[in-house]
Length: 192
Image (cartoon, rainbow, N blue to C red; front, top):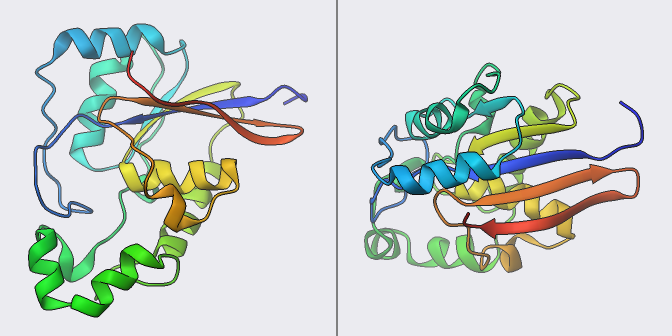
């Protein structure tokens, strides 16, 4: 690839409507808003599509793919692994792990849920997946809230705690450009 920027079009999967911590659990996406999905697909370039191996991301990728080529889905694009906190509500987690749950949100980085992974472990996993992507000018990646935030934090030079306040809506687009001058994020949480 020449000096042109590679544009990664990060799409958050359709909603699951779960009110719990959903990481590696394979909950389906609600893709009933076909008008929004059509707008999303029309907004994206004609470029290869890849998703995490969780069905909510795969189904969303299928819904927006159209005539775009499909790359093999990558397990390293899965959401953060919440271990024992998986499918638990915030009050349940606060009750079972009051100190650790505060540290998890207030000083993320190396802190991890019991049996889960930390922010930095997730970031390293996702960066490995991004490094394996083919060198197309545009690639559409259907993934998850935490996954997108790890890449956005790197692009903006933000720490994990401050980036956790960033909203990433379901079916939104966040574009990260990797150019010769470094990464930039000209589009964040855009709902077409």
